Length: 170
Image (cartoon, rainbow, N blue to C red):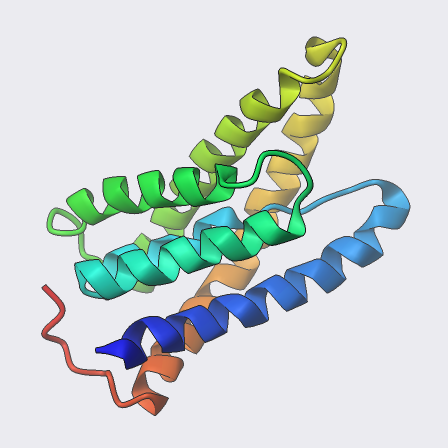
């Protein structure tokens, strides 16, 4: 039981390290890629409810630790998104990569919008940031389309290596 959320969390730890490096190199151009949906989508679609929730919550705390500002924002938004996707997984073909990618795009859009609204309240002129946010959202969504199939395959492989590949997930 512990192996499922631990295997998923270790892939999220790798994602945090890789995205940290990518965003570090993009900081020269003052750009930031947001792939918060990857912390949520696979866990909500593939893992049983409790291990998926634990892995998503730990991923949210991991993201909170790396971002200045209100601690717990990632945790709350990731867990909320996890709950919404968890309620939809019986209605969609969750085992198909294309469906997972589309769900990740929708979740990423929602999370990006929520964070943009949350953090714009602290700015003196919040309306001035929206064109830049829209550009970063488009870049993030394009990057998510490229990286999501690879990351979902990595998470599947991590479950196989942890000997949690059984399909009795609901």
